[in-house]
Amino acid sequence: MSEFRLGDRVPNFILPTVTGEQLLLESHQEIHEKSWHLIVFFQGSWSPECVRFLKQIEDHLSDFSKEHVTVMAIAAEKAAVLKRMADKEKFTFPLLADEFLSINEAFGVYTQHREVSNEGIRSFGEPACFLINHEGELLYQQKQTGPFGRACAADLLKAIRHLKSQQQTKGSAS
Image 1 (cartoon, helix red, strand yellow):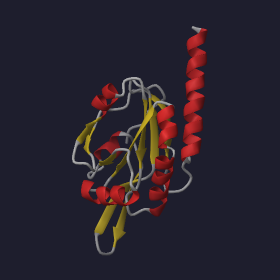
Image 2 (cartoon, rainbow, N blue to C red):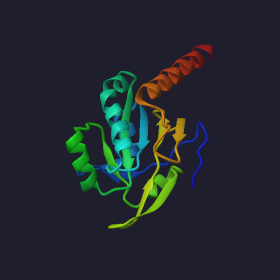
Image 3 (tube, helix red, strand yellow):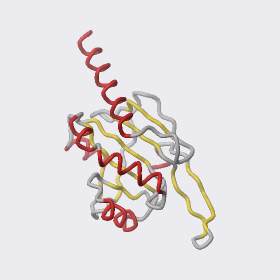
């Protein structure tokens, strides 16, 4: 399991989206060159807590945009399963399928393996959030060992605004 420190560059990755495209983090950063990026890991479409959290993110998407922050969410599920959830909930930010947990592992997201009676073993990542700047450097991280206790969308926005004000203060002091 990877452990990042603030200021570390996060690993580049490529994952399928629910729209059938491949999202390469590095390319996404180039397209949104002046933006920060919030990478949200969630358990899966089957978790009511995670779906509620993603709805909060969607409800605050314009606020994230005003702060020049893009949002993407990652779960260890097939893209087709995530697409059904995205269509039902009308999510407009990229949802990415990390079916084999490789990106969850690369980011050090806690992983659970639970026996589900009709499915065998289900493996999934616990909720986590990583905020990176336009250069891919880690500014904020929060990793959970279960579905409860994560920051709400409004708290994430407060953290982003705080980090931006610190950056401006640091920039004006130089």
